[in-house]
Image (cartoon, rainbow, N blue to C red; front, top):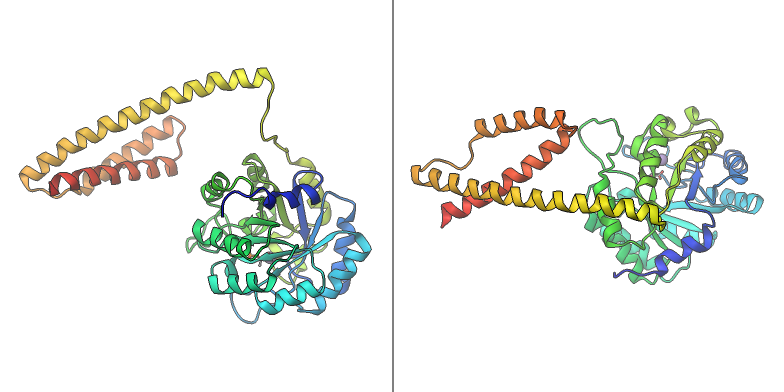
Length: 360
Ligand code: PEP
Ligand code: MN
């Protein structure tokens, strides 16, 4: 899949004002619930109404969605409000029903993207459709698997494509329900700048209090849109209660967001940026120079260890360095996480160098 501008065209056609906003409940619960929320979102920046009809649940016994009848409610909501309608599809049967009911936006859920057979089945069933199809990231942090899902759909002749970043599962408890791993989405933008990228702060945070900050962070990173779970009575929602916001809260979030431009072509901006970037370029060159020097010393250490027949890995020394650098880093405004990541990478490279010397 090369860069294809047509992947982006739908966004320009449908989304008259950046960014694209998709909103609605996690699940369609009743006809009244669907219609009430759709009407509350009608005269706002929302272009697409979302509601899950089939809900993949982690454990049996949860609410698994109302099924086909919900599609009728969406059709009614579309007729009454003019909003486009979107829902999740996970099987060939879901796709057929969604197409029959003229659903405008279909998305592949995170659990489904993780399964290439399931995505292929969806691609085969949707073959050539002109509906918009969005692929959520897989539950595991694997960019190739995510892009593989998009490729399967693209190869089935579907051109109105996009991706939804909903975060990744972890065993560790963090402040997020699903950790964002922003660098994966940044790499995706680098590889496919024309693939519309939508943030799902609801499933990333799992907590309505954090929806604003995560959405703003995404806009700061050039995202094209957002999908936000919205319910008139979030606390009593049948699924994902803690993360849903009311239509009024959603409107406030949208109002408070700062929309960034992709670039600025004024002379003032470019002269400031040219200077600062020249600065960065010099510093980057210095960094590389220093790292190269550091590796030369590591090589010498490798030779001394080899001559004395001492193992490469010296854990005590390594932990000492890490502890010291974390403290030093803090003083310079560097986070512990960054210092750890950076020194682990440097250490790995040193070990690689010393392995070479041992094996010479
Ligand atoms: C959803 O959008 O309601 C949903 C189930 O999302 P995900 O596939 O990201 O878990
Ligand atoms: Mn949900």
